[in-house]
Amino acid sequence: MKRTFLLLSICLLVSISTFGQTKLTENTLRINKDAIGAIGKPSIMDWMIGSWEGEALGGSVREIWTNPGGGAMIGMFSLVKDGKPIFYEFLTFTAEKDILLLKLKHFHPNLVSWEEKEKTTDFRFIKQEANRFYFSGLTFEKVGNDQLHIFLALTRDGKTHEEFFKMTRLN
Image (cartoon, rainbow, N blue to C red):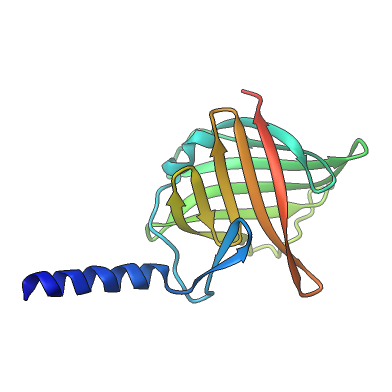
């Protein structure tokens, strides 16, 4: 009886933790807006510390991540096309109420924010499977020590497509 109850409890917890999780694109997942996200600490992403560069979004991209400190990892991103900056991002991996989040804010080249003053674009952590880290609408894949693949689900005109970032570690 106790064993049956334990097994049922485990099944219920697993189904609750994956409830609302759906495939968004080939390499990304989504969780419902009312789903909280998965427990995690920014330190699970510390393999990304350093500088990365690659091609994506029709231009050259660069991303830099700092060592964790104060409960967060801080990152910066830039997209350059035809020698001109297109946009920048300021990013953090942080935990709010033990839920891991990637929070970011976009900026035009003149550093005017896309988002309203008090707003950020947030990606809630869903799960880690081997070398893949799934956030709602965004997946990071560690490919060895010097390669990073990023899959980003973008929606335009009601259609969702996947952007692929192939990044190489600079240091």
